[in-house]
Image (tube, rainbow, N blue to C red; front, side):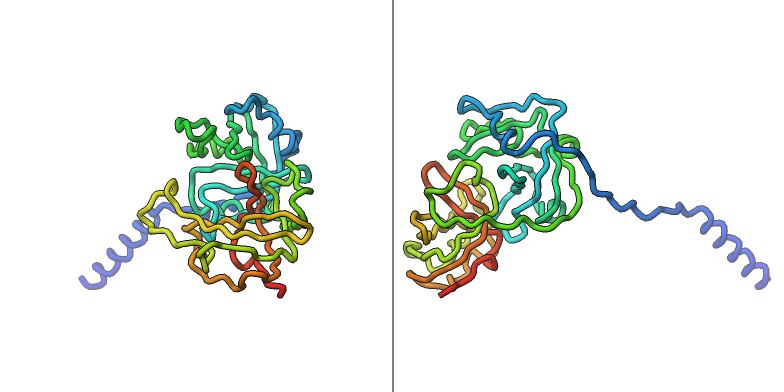
Length: 272
């Protein structure tokens, strides 16, 4: 009996094992390779008449490298890409974008039916908006994202362009990766940290920002603007007024104020 019982158990185990569904390991996602036929500068030039502009070009393909990351909280549901002509903000309605869109990665975009919008003289690419405060909004429909934005190969990160004076800044510098060399720290008001840390229960629309002004070696001021949600928001500044500093970040503007947005405070070097 004992022998029969053991044989039955062995047979059942074999049968159950044979019925188990075998799952293949997920295929590794291969980087996409496309041929760009429109530059970022040409894409931004489609924006017209101070109003939201729907891109109507089914064959257009734009390519650029990622230059920003939301890993440290200073960018939110957005990332920037640039090519040899210009840079642009891509507004995507998801978080932890850094796990998909990595600094240095080639990105291809089919902008047909996406929406160009302006905010403070910064042109971005997103989706249509129902909020009258903004000309465009986040692309937050997965099907639209999957059919519009494609990840390519990892390449070397973009080398920063040196900005030494505000008089030399053009529209093509907006949304690109730059370095301010030997900038003199001027003022941060009463702030001794990059920003005042935000309460996580406060909405992004109500987020506080820290602003620190630097004077460029060749003349003119640029404000370094940091979100209260940045992981380094409450980190003490490693320098005082009058210090010489090198700073790398994405160059933006809000109307007449030029602004630099840091990926991380590790992109700041105190010279003296």
